[in-house]
Image 1: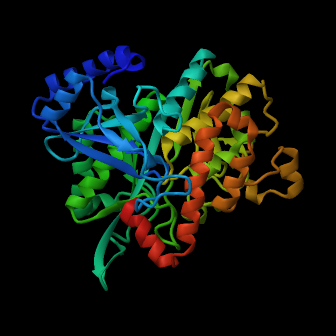
Image 2: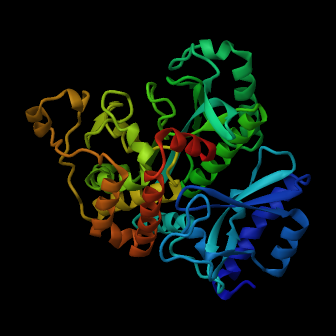
Length: 446
């Protein structure tokens, strides 16, 4: 039942459900979605009549607490087991039409049986960080770039194999891919469904890898931005599947071709503190990488001189070879992010680092870099204050996160320690896989 901690916000929350059903009375099923620490989207399908019954009675579906402590194939991590239960709290403000007719998606948080928030819930973590920043009169807008590669698949010796791209005549912003009717039917169906779901798309274009496209989402407040990102990705993936294709977010689907990122555009008010904010981000970037580059496969894309943000911790105005690209004022693009990241946690750690910089009035000691940092001499980098590189592996990044006491004070030990347990178990699992098997395994899931 709804406890005192939930009653007021629950009554406000259900008004969004009522408004949504007034607009879309044909909806019959709701996908209640939770993004776990491996960035796996866990889903419960609930018929409309049962959801309305739960809402009326103030009841919530239960889910095992191990949901925040298991790997992609439901293997519990150390310290987690099948005991205990959380409640699934749907945030109806996030309601969107799904790709499948008659379905809607809603992003959820986890709550304790008494209605209190679960401190390790990724979405709750971001909400807390945004509220903390709001108390210091900081408000954010976030826009995501979704890069995907459309791939054919086949069954070989009983296992799914991904490979053959749809098109070889593919390059950044070129028109040739747009002349392929097979490709354009997929892209146009995606754009139609995104529009139908009231998801703002500012532009779409071909990217550099074979059959790689980018869909640019419009800016929203942080929670709404991540909620919308997940809805958009599901629409893209489901639509591709209808055409017997796989839309993958894997950072390096082809070893000899450009990789796939998930760049984040971030701006905020008041803009006059942006140097302190981004000084904090740069200061903690090696820890941040543990969340935004969350997998061993992520580091196959961490290279210099490839428009991917490079390896040197730096920033520059309109410089795509630095992890932070300043666009205008407080509007920066964070390039050291890929699609395997849980972006509730990713934005949480970025905002935490930036807020730490503002609270500490941290000066920006790294100067504007106008060239590719990798092309500079050591002395030239030193003059710009560029001295550190991003981690070269997920294990190294996790080590930085584990020891980052200043970030722990803002994010909280519980979230960081939970994340470390899951990612270390993941490292052990993938260390046993052959590279080709790992690639196909990841494409099948991301």
